[in-house]
Image (cartoon, rainbow, N blue to C red; front, side, top):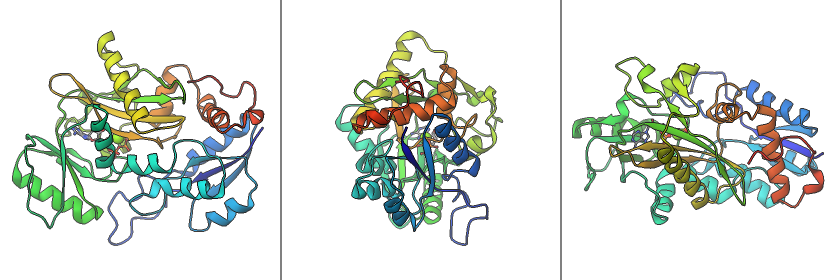
Length: 343
Ligand SMILES: Nc1ncnc2c1ncn2[C@@H]1O[C@H](COP(=O)(O)OP(=O)(O)OP(=O)(O)O)[C@@H](O)[C@H]1O
Ligand SMILES: [Mg+2]
């Protein structure tokens, strides 16, 4: 049994403040998700201390006497926000679940993650960065293009308007995203094929679970094949997802291998969800790596994928703790039978 600090950032119920993007709250967790993780940890036999990852969390972490932190904190602000709680924990010498400071910061910045992928020869769409105040130079990129904020998640700023067919569209959308999200805009070649998301769990020998396909033909005709903010907020019903995806064995292997390669290239630990799309020739490309995947039971992609493989929510949460305890040399704190061997 371990004394586990559950560190999280709660979504605010209020509307975004003046100057904030319309979807400013999308990354943060609801109280019910935080409670679900906490209850799962308790059922797994652990002692749980809830700690909001706010401006005052440092002192609470110093005083709490924790064996391990279960980190689900998205971070409050800044271009490296997902690395902030891991950095505090590293400084205090408190072991924590999931990826480290560097991995968190690299994966949040999609251009940096793509450079690492490219170095390892892992396919990812060609890209450039643009801003409202600079001329549009797309170099050798082939239209159609896809634009999104450089360091956001939960499809913030992503809609049907993200698919760009002309320079006029590009100017309009780069200006909108740059001004609304106050960061560089990532401009990529559009990947025209099917979309999958793959759960990878484990450390020494990580395992890629069967890919889940996002089913765009279920969306209204004018929506387009984009896993948009609207899609994630409104279409959680099973008809929009297929897990395991119907794939011939060769493509199934290729998608899983691409996900595993990305997980290892970015030095992920315990768990990550890798978003993949096929190009028009059917070749899997990594769009991004999520080392802090959503944990809303029955809603988020990760628990949905694990559930389809017969791994329940408690087993997922406690399996992550179990792997972290082993990695950190804290085997003596493991609870037998609480979510072991999921990877
Ligand atoms: N190059 C691309 N070509 C086609 N579609 C893309 C491309 N990049 C992103 N998309 C679409 O936009 C969606 C959101 O992009 P991405 O996964 O990078 O954003 P995110 O906000 O970090 O997502 P998450 O909620 O997983 O954190 C993708 O799931 C996909 O549907
Ligand atoms: Mg994504």
